[in-house]
Length: 261
Image 1 (tube, helix red, strand yellow):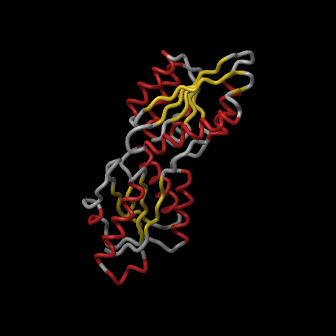
Image 2 (cartoon, rainbow, N blue to C red):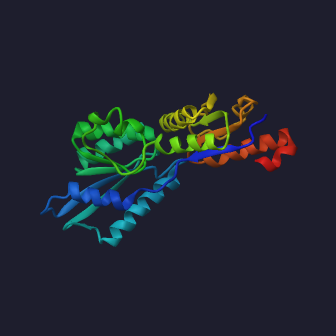
């Protein structure tokens, strides 16, 4: 197997707390409000639990700094665990709006969760701030469908355009992409491919491991031997497991190339 480099992108945890909360306060808190009810949806259990814990901790840190006061309104934060499952996220969002009467809800991790939660905000006419979900179409092709949706960060494909151009600058001509099989993976790979092929490169193969895959043994042998590099888009534990398994496979295949990895 010939690929000698791993071009890696990954999903980073942590909410954009300060900007999200400032915007939330400006849009949601009535001038004379005594209480502002905020729903927070995060994976507190499951493979993305650490990301969820970091999100909630960061949000709570900001609340502590401002003593839970937004423009005179006392904040009540209600946290719900979606386990990074879009359908469960929808259930929790509806519970927050209809039962807990929140003025807005925040959170989610996966792009697929963002796609699931945004329609809830539209149906219930409730502001939704996506702290992490970078789903492209929520602020691109489907922007008009979500008048209550607010994005405070980047979208899935955005940083990968730059990475595609960088790959051309390195002299790579043929690249295999290996991306998690869900919305963020598709959009990130798409952004990379667009920029890479615009500057003369070619994506010669796309491989889609299931989201949450731990064993990449069935996928690694399929990587085309004439690729110059591998672009990987993994999330959660996959981001550590795939490069390790690919490196081990390359080392076992040709010990003379260990210095290139």
